[in-house]
Image (tube, rainbow, N blue to C red; front, side, top):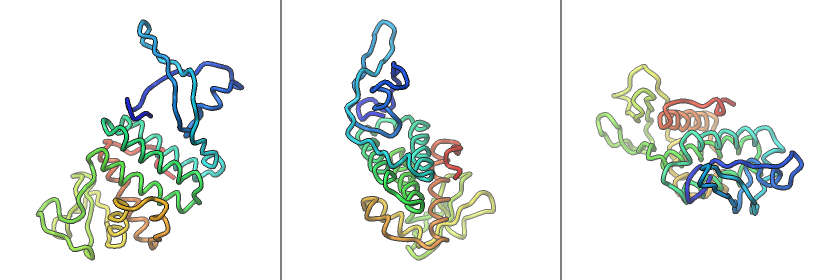
Length: 219
């Protein structure tokens, strides 16, 4: 994933013990040198100056699964399209946090990523009003997300098909997720109901943006 060209495919040559293959491992980041053969239209990794190794991601199952969910989402959305630097900064922030996160903070990290990645993709719904009747919704009132319509609805506009409830606790946390750094935000704990709502809601929003749910999200 690059800020200049989004997701780029390049081949790494060398045996399993080669230094280059060890450096260019999943979730590392830094300056990547790629040789492009214009005749064959192929790209080869020639060197990688690693700035962040993130070894902690591989030390805990929840970290590895969360990082894989983030990576698969990035690949499925073509690296965020034309967002470039903003997409790379968001991904780097989340991977840095996951590298040292406990199992609960991994959940917060994934919620944070889904919500901010939805904004990068232009798919983040406005929580201040009902998408159907345009009624302004106070912060203390519930909303329901329709996966069929990819829209947030008030109590009067919902139906029984594929809805995810979003209460005031989850809404407040997500509103702060637009402004705060992940490290600071992770110290603001949600009750179990609000945490589950935020997780289900952001996952539904991302599924709507991609047109599918990813197997990597199921943990």
